[in-house]
Image (cartoon, rainbow, N blue to C red; front, top):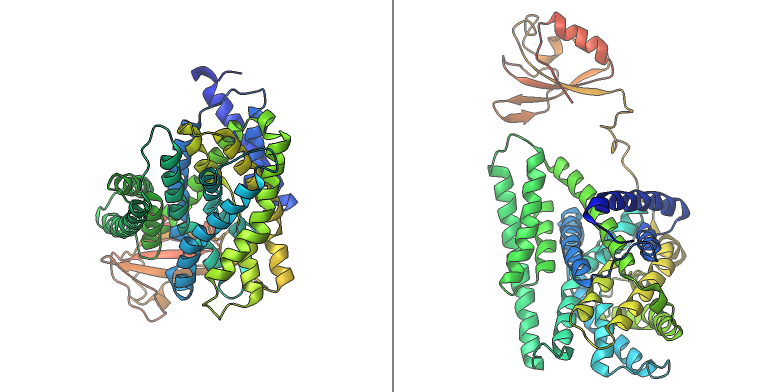
Length: 496
C-alpha cells in the first residue's frame, strides 16, 4: 500500500494507536515496550505499507535521539552521578572502543564460516554500530520497571548509556568514510584528532547552551507557561545543530545540556518535565516504528543472516561486553563482582545501533543491507534476553533494592478530592485579626503558602497577613470553602 498525502495522517494515527496498546500489553507481560513498537513497524511493513527510506529514518532518528538524550540528562541528578562519574565516563569511552574491537575481531573470524566474507574494516564497522548501549532502552526499561539497584548502579548505567553514543557515532562515521567509494578517508592520526575535537567541542557547547537555556527560561517572562516547553525544545535542536555545525558531537552536547538544565532551578519546571516525558515517548514510538518499517523481512530471515546475527548477539552479551566492562571497572575496587556482572548484562541495545546501521546504507557501502539486518537481529535478541531480565538478574545477583514510590506523586490527579485554590487577602478576611490563626476556614483546609510581593513562604499560625497577600489553600471541603469565599466577598478565586 502506497502512503499518500491523503492517507498519511490516518495511517500514522493507526500506527501510534496500535503502538500504545502494544506498550500496555508489554507492561503486563513484563516485556520491553520498545520491542513491541518494533514489532508493530515490522507487521505493517510486511506487504501492507511501502517504506524504504534510510535517509528519512536516519533523519527522524537524529531528532528522536536528541530529545531522548536531553530528557535523560534532565532526569539525571548530578548528586547521584558525582560518585560514579569517572567509571561512567570510562565505560562510555574506553568501554565502547574495547567492545567494538573485541566484537569486530569475532565477526571477522566467524563471517567466512557462515558464508559471508567480511573484511576487517567492514567487520569493525558492523561491531561499531552496536558498541554503545542504547539510552532509549536503558532509560525506558529501568524507569518503567522502577528498578532499584544497590552500589549506585542505576545512575552508572544511565550515565553510560546517555554519554556513550558519541564514541560509537564517531567510529561509525570514520569507518563509513574509510569504506565509502564516494568519501575520501582519513589517516589514523587525523581520526584521533577529530575524535578529541568532537568530544571537547560537544562538551563545551552542551554546557554553554545548557546555561543559556536556564538563563533565558528564568529571564524571558512569558505569560503563557506552555511556551516555556516549546522554548526549551528549540534549545535542544539549536544545541544539536550548532554543535554539529562547528564540528562538535551534537549527541554529547544535548545530553550535557539536559544535565545542566535538570540540575538547576528553572521556572515552570514541573510543566517542562511533564512535556518532555510525553514528547520522549512519542519520538521513541515513532522511531521504533520507522525502524520496523524499514526492515526487509525476506532478507532478514536468510539463514546466513540469522546465524551471523544470533552468534554476534550471544558473543556480544556473554563475551565482548563482559570483558570490556571488567577491564574498564578494574581500577574501581568499590564495585563488587556481582555489580560488575550486572553492568555487563544490562548492556541493552535498541534504536541507536539500528539508526547507526542506516549510515552504511545511505553511503552505499558494500554489504550495507546485511549490516542493517544483523544489527536488527542483535537488537531484538538483546531486548528479549536482556530487556526482560533486568529485574530478575538484579535479584539473582543480589544487587536489587526496593525502590519506594511517592504516595503523593499523583497528588494533582482528578481522582483526589483535595483541591488547590488561590485568593487575595481582603479587609473582610482580616476583620477578626491579621494573623493566620484568626482567619476562619472550614475544617480540613490549610493555607500552605503565602506570596507577598513576589516572595514565597510557608505560614504558621502566628504569621501576619497583609492586604493583597496571595494565599495558596488546600482543602478537602471544596464546596464548603467556595461558599465561605462568597461570605468573605472573595469573587476572584483561581482554581488549580
